[in-house]
Image 1 (cartoon, helix red, strand yellow):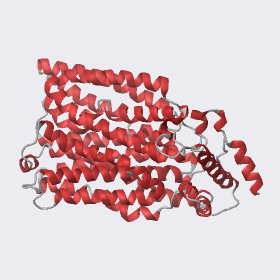
Image 2: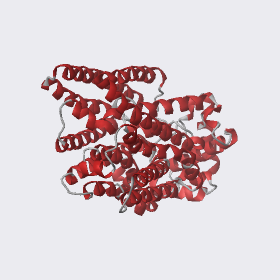
Image 3: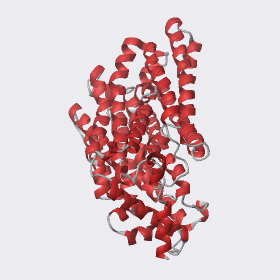
Image 4: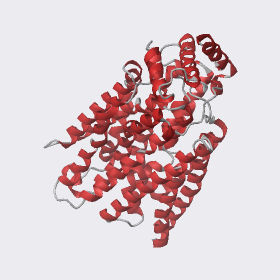
Length: 490
């Protein structure tokens, strides 16, 4: 394996410059979090309900799900933009589409069709940018810090959710349509900041090498990983490993989507990506993400202001625990262990949540209702060990460069489809089965624990280029070739 010198980023001038700019890319992750809290909030607003004719049933399902339908459609565009245009430009293109979608939703005299169309564009544009920005984070990061940075990236889902929840709380007392137009419009704030700053970052050295621009790629690595020292032996070895891996992938890879299933290693990668994406949405968390309003009403919390305060507090708690556990321990405990802790914890807590909901429904016991509220907080506490921090990070890091953009797009597409499934099935299940519907998620969580234990591969430690050995076997080890490359170039 490549010998990666241990460095403290804030004492390293190149990494300080690089990491100070990284939050620009991380703003992508706020988009879906913002939308989840936004839709929860809008459903508590009489002005929004009245303006759009009190949508319910399948119509509210469409309002909610259309953003994920747009996100799924981005599958057919996002990887090509990321690979052909580069990570920065693809991020910017996605943000522009998203901003157009927000504008359509808040123009005067907007109708239901326009609102739904705007939400489609928000989902479509967001998944184009999300299909590129985390790749740039991963491919720019110093190997020692890759896990922390990529995990931190997706925890900003909660930052978007926090901003939306408290924006809704702040405008819930406004009279007229301003109460819902302001939170919808603020959805454009973080993407706009990203658009203004994304080109301050360097382009991915791996993308530059793939486009036959090795001198530019080397310059990026030297500037940020070696403080401008072109003779630094680690950067020489890192650059050689990138070039050698890309050369090997070009020799072995078949162009197109078929490469995702052509080899046993890639088929296993694809299976893990699908499972990770599905579990990230369908472990019971989807109930709270988009239908917290219904959950709270089922246990007697019916006041709009109380619901908004609960939602805002839940998002702050969720963000803090995801940073405290997932980000801090991702390289100490490893990815697989964090997935297991989260899955087992969620299964136990959700089972208690179900039992308390049953007691409240059958007896009206206020203590049981309060216990449900406590279980929701505890559920998100244990979920914070892995979700959502590892969803994108794990899916992207196990992929070789040649299919990394396509594989991440599959991750985002499955996540979107799982979200659509949640958004159509959950309201029907809650309406017809109430708390009994929760047993569906208990079964899913049992399957999740077993799948993680028996199928998931630990990815802590290797560089992106060395990850191939875990999936493709010892023949994928390029260490000897890299050593020869470095020796011949010195």
